[in-house]
Image (cartoon, rainbow, N blue to C red):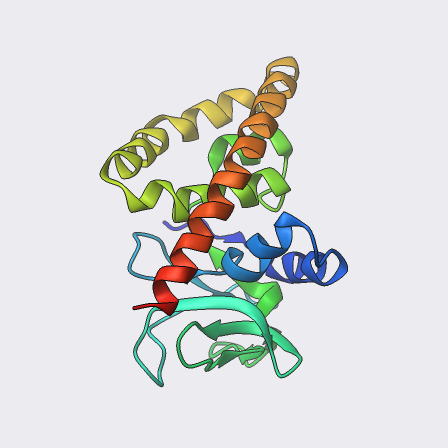
Length: 200
C-alpha cells in the first residue's frame, strides 16, 4: 500500500518570494516541484476532504512528464515544464472538493532518515536531500545504486531512531551537515540541467 506524504510546494514558493536572492530561491523555483514522472516515483494530488489521491499523468496538451511548481500569470500552481499547462486548483473526482494544487501535492517516497530526525517531511534538510537524490544521484548509475541501497535499510533504521532521542539529535546534526554540502552540489547540477534543456 502506498504511503503518501505532502510536498510543501506552497511553503517553498512563499520562501522564494520572501527571499529572492538566496540559493534556496533556485531550488524552490526550479526543483521544489520538478517532478519527472519517468522516475520510479508516484506523484499526485491528495484531496483535503476525503484523502483520495489523483495520480499526475502526462501533460494533456503536449504529453511531457515534467512539471514545475511556480507562478503562471500570478497564480501559484503545478505546471508543465514545456507548454505551461497545469493546475492552480483541482477538483476531486470522488467528493467534488476544490483543492489548492500547491497545498495538496504528494509523493510516495520519503527521505526516511531525514524525516525521522527532523520530525517532518517538510524540513529544509528533507527538501535539499530529496533534490540531491533527484537532480544528482538519479543521473548516474552509481548514484541510482546508492539510492536503492539507502532505501533497502533506511525504513527500519528510521523506526529505530524514533525510540532514541539522543541518537536522533546526533543524526540530525549529521543530516544538517550533509544537507549543507548537498545544497551547492545540487544547485550546480540544476544549473547544468537548465542550460542543457535550453540548448537542446
